[in-house]
Length: 432
Ligand code: KE4
Image 1 (cartoon, helix red, strand yellow):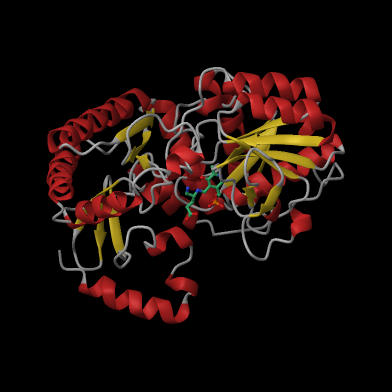
Image 2: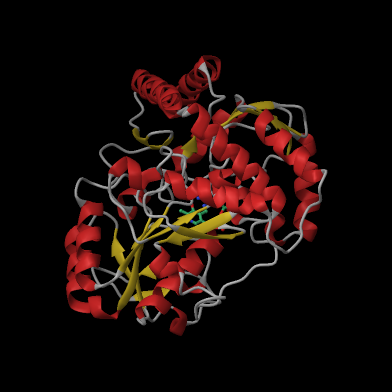
């Protein structure tokens, strides 16, 4: 597949953009080769600057559950543009979107909009600390909540839950109140909360983890978090930036029947434009400025263009409830990929929750980050390269998830499985 223009643009970008990209995972570091520069997208298809077409399973890391350039979203943006781009003042559409989010999400009585998932999670943490008067936070190894200092922590070695900065530039003191427990390890988090619960403001979790590949919660894990946080007077934050309105109209919390105290949203609810939101009960949210003492602000928070795209997306989802159909398509993809890998004699593990899934080159369940890291990364990279050369665009990291949209149909799935069969055969024979 000729990607000369992407190659040239990649050389140019690296001279003026840090690492050549505006977000690290886009640099293809884990899969090799030059990143692909995209020019346009329609439905489930993206087109690169060399004119090649790909079935897109990244969908901008989740937002595009209606596919690229859905007519309802484009119409809403065109209408919004006739009025302006930003006012830095209240607009009716922000209230409209807030009402839609609250109507669908069990934990929400009041929300605050921001411009990214990082801002949503970071602000929810600050609110929990302000509300409880406690400094401690608990997160889970392999879960990602954006790049705020307190959340960029790595698990300490061994079973210890002490934290070390997960990035240079994060001072030790920024993570001294952050604790890290293994995902799906109820005993570890129960022990931590029983011992330190009165210091812990919030437990933050991706209710279905998507940043170590797709790792579902084991039966009882979320229920245990709910019970133990209630017992400790700690708030439970579901980071539904990825799962929100992707796992159903009531997100993971409605699908799995566990209601947190706080929820962070972004991606789907912004319809592909920069919008995040966080919220919870009115009793907690009233502690936010201007009425409360917990400060948070944003120049473009609730931006009219982002709200227009988000509102159109959420209203389309509420009107059509496409989840069962997308899940059926995702199931066909899962079945087809497993059969193709089996025919080639290549051991793979696929884990799926609704319309999101991951493929690991290992056998057996992936329960946590250690399991995910034990998968064969070399084979993952070879698979990614083989699939991109056959017109299938997969997330360029083992620790990401595939996303499907309303626009992925039988033709796209057949094309994907055909490409996978050939790529698995190459891997089995050592040709790639
Ligand atoms: P953003 O600041 O990137 O909008 O959201 C941060 C975030 C928070 N919480 C969860 C569960 C998330 O998955 C994310 C962002 N997800 C990554 C992909 N896994 C974004 C891709 C990127 O970093 O470029």
